[in-house]
Image 1 (cartoon, rainbow over the protein chains, first blue to last red):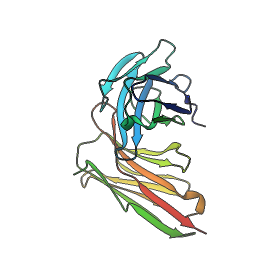
Image 2 (cartoon, rainbow over the protein chains, first blue to last red):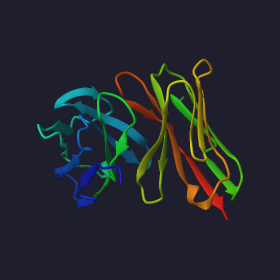
Image 3 (tube, one colour):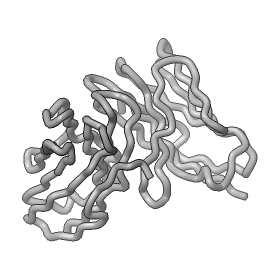
Image 4 (tube, chains in turn green, orange):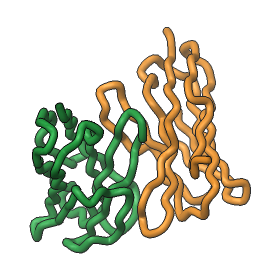
Length: 112
Length: 108
């Protein structure tokens, strides 16, 4: 158990819908990272937050947005969902800006 | 060409064998990570290194910055080592760029 929690574990929804994925980092960790793992693209970095501020942005679509709240949990919002958004979404955390990343168990999203 | 290349893509070994997985990268990095992904999907960080060699139990990771190459070795492999091993490089800021992974199967 990494200490990082993600909810929900599984999510099934329809095209065009909007979903919110939630991540709670390890106690005391200030950085949260979001990743997408799909069959055709592999693992890809989406975005990083540090102490509430966006720090780095990767291959995140405009339909996707994220934020980190004062209690340090983070949410990833996916809107206007398409079939190709079906993937495993992981979050990870580190105590500071860099370091060993501790991964959550992931949220498996299926868009029908 | 991918920024991070792993080889082999698939590896089957017999229990007890010494295993090597290679990772080559083409960009400047601040660190390299080795990750293990279990069949259920969970990801565990094995090593983060920026130079030299690290050892944890039966796992050894090495990196050669000049040659832009890293290796992950598993000594005395066991069926419970069966997993996907992923190399990831840390570039600008702390974003990770991932290799495609190596599927390892260790047979009893």
